[in-house]
Length: 284
Image (cartoon, rainbow, N blue to C red; front, side, top):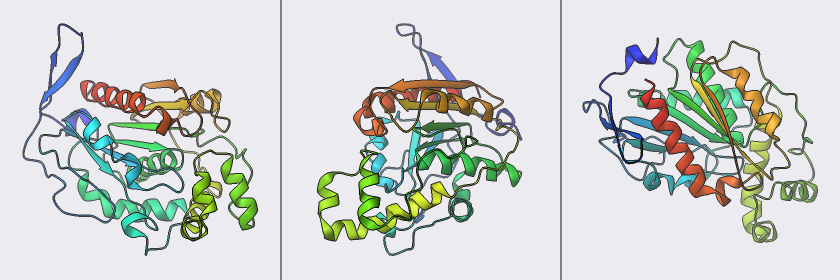
């Protein structure tokens, strides 16, 4: 089912001074996120929103990674912070160690929120989760997302290159983790805190490092890719390889920073994400 046939009620207005178009109007009788879901941590409901932006965290991260995005996105974007089991408000639940099982369970928890156009954003592990959810929706013959935005992740069809670390002894695992520059030294040195976080991060790394890509036709939605210029784990070539995963438009943009440029270049990243969402809407 094509997006142009399913979603209607959008019009745009061109700002003569900037040359940009902004979305002004949308159908207003769609659901908002008023009903709570354990899979979502939404701090603000935008009843005028015309599109939902689902944000998926990196390994060891949780929904709060994107807390600031709620206010930084335009008013027509409802930012949906996906909360995975095993962290944050779901700390008492076991973290998933298998991507396929996670995506299947997540779909059951989020499918009722696909009543208006949606875009998926994920950084690192989150990019893989978003990608496989889009593919699951296709297998179920459900409408596809309006767009997929992936960040800091090698294309899924590329062979595993990094060292397998999820099953290493604790000390060695912590040493390898530091190479990603995403875990503060203060956390690693806090034994009590580290004892809580380490099993979650291990589970996430197992989920990613045991992932087995299955060849399938490219997605029908656009794919926009972000990367860090100083990321030693993901090269520009690794990112460009995402192009084969779509029959629609593709773009690649690099930002200053290492693997966690999602933090160090946050303002630039949120602005670029908002621009991608706006462009996606204008094409619908």
